Amino acid sequence: MTTYFFVAASEKFLTVEEPLEEILKERIRNYKENKKEIDFWLLKNPSFLKSSAFLDLSKKIPNTPAAVISTDKKFITFLKLRLEFVAVGEFECPNSEINDPFKVE
Image (tube, rainbow, N blue to C red; front, side, top):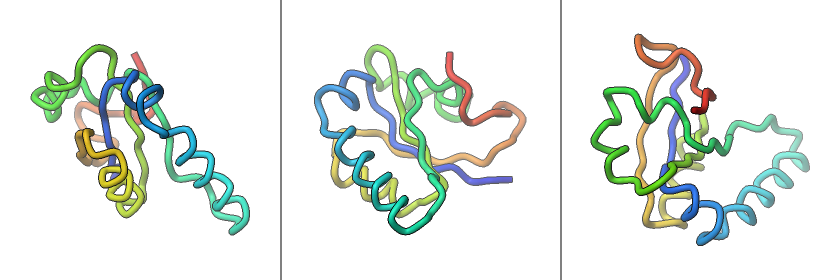
């Protein structure tokens, strides 16, 4: 099993109101320079948020949700501090409800 960590908010907040694109571009550049594999992904309307473990969290996200997921807990902690108004969580996959962490609705 793999543990995934995430920040989630409305798609509009993450992709329009916050400088997430800049942060992700810089991170990609840094990974390329250091020959490191990408371990984070931006998902619009991720299915994992519909699992029973995240029902309460999903209700707090207005409109269409989006999430940045990663296997790097430190990166998600950095995003939480940088973006402030996001929900955070983690899950192991595969599990009884989440077979594909990258599935979107």
